[in-house]
Amino acid sequence: MGMESSRNSSTSDSPDSLRRRIVSLEDGLEKQRAKIAKLTSELSRWREIVQRAPDGLALVAGGRIVVCSRRLASMLGCDDAGAVEGKGAAELFPESDCGRLSALLSGTSRSGAPARMECALRRADGKSLSVEAAVSPPFEPAGGGVYVVAAFRDITRRKIVEEETVRTQRLESLGILAGGIAHDFNNILTAILGNISLTRMSVDEDRPEYQTLKDAQNACLQAQALTRQLLTFAKGGVPLKRVASIGHIVRESVSLAVRGSNVRCSVSIPPDLRHAEVDEAQLTQTLNNLLINANQAMPDGGEVSVVCENATITEESASSLSPGEYVRITVRDQGAGIPDEQMQHIFDPYFTTKEDGSGLGLAIAYSVVRKHGGFITARSQVGSGTSVVIYIPATGRRVADAEQVSEEELIRGEGRVLVMDDQESVRSTTAKLVRELGYDVETAPDGQRMVEKYREAMNTDKAFSALIVDLTVPGRMGGKEAMRRVLEIDPGAKGIVFSGYSNDPVIADHARYGFKGVVRKPFQPHQLAATLSRVIASK
Image 1 (spheres, rainbow, N blue to C red):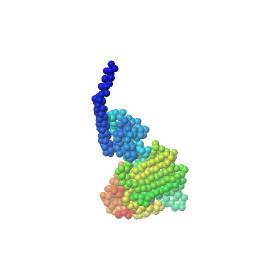
Image 2 (cartoon, one colour):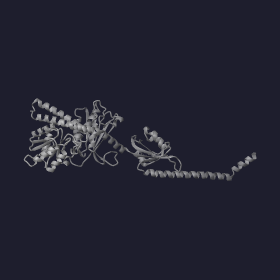
Image 3 (spheres, rainbow, N blue to C red):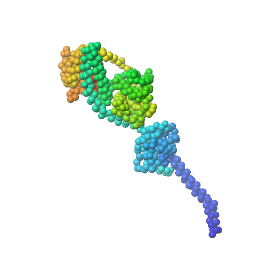
Image 4 (cartoon, rainbow, N blue to C red):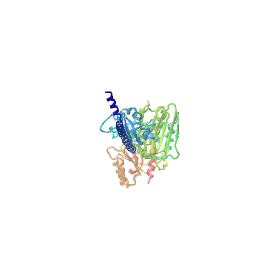
């Protein structure tokens, strides 16, 4: 038995047997080499496909990135795709997104269709990037292994647009209510302010009641400022734009906002700062609101900086703005800052963290800037202050010479004026003021009667020199239609839009509808006088 065993061992270790075993091992190694070569070829092919993709793509095996596209590396803030390869979900995503994505990338979450979700990518600089992730079902290529393909699309711009849309819709309901209130309130204020002004005109300045009337007038003007705040939410609160120097508006706003406070303010305005077409009153109000917020953020004093710059928005900019030239205004304070959970609400109406705050300041700023075709955003860090940035479309046009009219200067004139307004108190008060300015006056309660009176007087020695036309007349002919009919009768007719609120574009573009000027309710006598004089003198 021992000899037989020795013979078998000798046979198994014979040269032929060893050759066969070597050949078998070589065949196995060759197959492995072929398999590795095929896998390497597959990876090379995948790498080429991945690198050409416009979205960030990754080939993932075992939950870790095997191939990373240059686009994905760029999204992650890395210059080299190799720096990303080998990383897993925990290194790429915040904790809130990591669990589900880990399962998808490892191939343990299997389904017949790609899985999609919105998530954040953790960049190399510590910031987050909003992306839409699509992860393929796991697959096994011929070279072996289990892989998934993950695609990441940067949706930062889309998210900005979506947030802007939601915020705008949130203001819509408030705008409807605000517009109606402002219209009615402005009519009441017009009658009150007009009668106070008329009474002041008949009282000597050295009489004690003169100052009392002036105080009442100032109170009405404060109420007027409140209605203008309401109008910024309304569709009818469209800006009455003209070319203006943004630098001049900023300097004036800063001068008023910091007067009497313990806050310093530094202003940086380059000499070549572009001009813009703006409603100066609305933009001033916006800047005042921002500066008031900045002051209140620093009760113990500090410094507010206002920096104006020219800015260019390109197609690649992560913004909801259209490409073009803009003026950028940054208001920065040194206050306590705003926590992240509150930042997303700061432009919401009535959201405030102040005990005595109204929550309207930033909401008004948002509405004004958007109606100017601009954009407003804010950045804040607790303990390091807050920055609010405004973009306003720039223009290459020159600033027109402003009409400077003193409050006490009343430009008187002569001629006949027709006043149309559906509110008797407004109609009567306005007529008295126009007579006080030296004009003959007639009135009409609606557009139909206005057209009739104009036609009757047209070919007589009592033809009207100008018309003051209320734009909104509920249930009857309004000012726009009435003016159109008057112009058919007399193309040289001179109409002035007279309104406290309207959602009609005629307020912002009155010349397009045949009007020569605008008077907003409530008004002061010198404003009405200046507009009447200019319109009647126009050709």
